[in-house]
Image: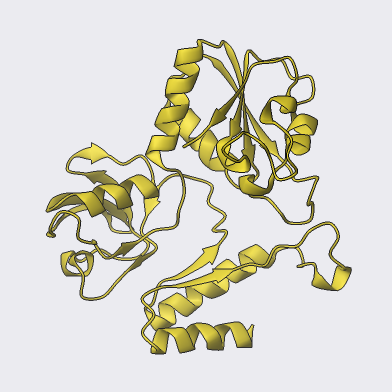
Length: 263
């Protein structure tokens, strides 16, 4: 821990605007001495929060372990429009220009693309509104963890409406499952939706991202689940629809309707 903290402090002194700390993953083949103990993610997050508070430099942990889509501000860069507006780490953006915010990614994209905007935030003292002055395309100075891109969710909604499926199974990584569930809870979807977190059996260990899942992983998780449509994350497949070992995505549920969410 001391080595990691000293590295973070060195980077902050050297002028890093943000520091990202990655928790190492391990596969099922890793020897016991290379496997991280239970609770390591939470311990790292607590320490990173303490380092950030002491340094003033945003320290982000990967994976962030998010469970909601609240546009909470992770950090504010000095001498930026966000700092000038008085926005602070720990506050949550609830509205931009009077419109509700979908996610952290949506808030970042909206602030990046737009110019001056009224920002309504929720903090310990209640709700307050500030005006953030910036040029369109200029950075706001706000730092967020990455959660769910609004265009990905919009594409998913278009897909299920286009297919007119009544029973839809959505296979996700274990990391993304809480975020997809949060989005589904906000939407009046025209179907019965089952969210299916897919564990990595091929790599195993602590591997939990969608990009490393294989067709065999999806097939084992889906089994005989009843569905008119099965949606898989496109990031797990190449341009030809094949996974890391060359198996076609359609083999995740042979003889059934399977679609990839490309966004």
